[in-house]
Length: 262
Image 1 (cartoon, rainbow, N blue to C red):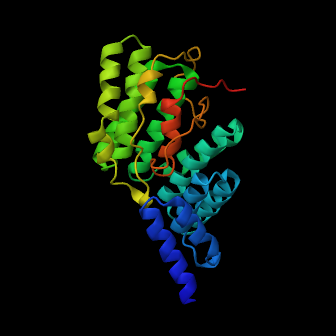
Image 2 (tube, rainbow, N blue to C red; image 1 turned 120 degrees about the vertical axis):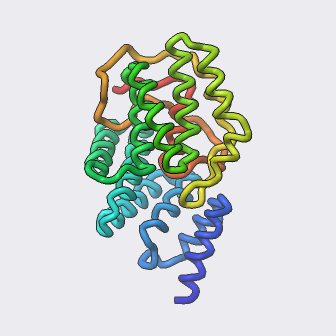
Image 3 (cartoon, rainbow, N blue to C red; image 1 turned 90 degrees about the vertical axis):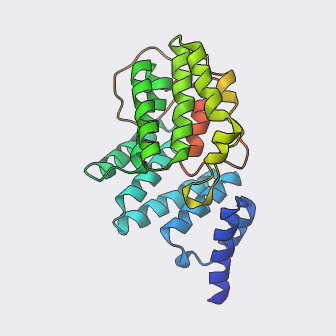
């Protein structure tokens, strides 16, 4: 039993240092029965960084179930959003939209939280890349930033700045948009994002957001989508990245070309 506890503690400590290989190996040797839902989340993140997406998705689904069983709707919604991004990245758009709708349902009627900021960020990226609805994207990026500021979630704040900058560029406000992107990707802003949950660090390099800020977007769509975010192309990213869910948002905001929904 002591060895099992030691393995879990070692995994948690490794994750807090962003040593994902070490965290993954430590969790792999521990007894799964000893995992709290938060451990499953962290294990999933470590698996993701090891390139084990199927395992990461499976672990996140188990973590989601654990949070639901514990009655923690906000944590469950956070996992649902992460899974929405995961399935979207695999072009499983219907499944992605289902997880997003699930997150909306879980947050409905709950006190506002950091998860609402992530939800707004998700909607904004969806409006930017899929709907081509720049006014809606700007509105939701603004809401995401406001909620991130209110709840001390610097990840969401920085990503919202990047997204708003891209939306402004696409709307013709090039200088204003690039200024926001530069502000968000400055080393000081990235460093401020270290205060996040679950031990991951915010990406220190999202410079591609600036170089790709003028890429094309699909034609205008409906004002508000209720499905998960689709239409982004992931690219290689450094291991120091945002916490669960934010990581995929970074990919969406820094991709070179949006991918059309099939």
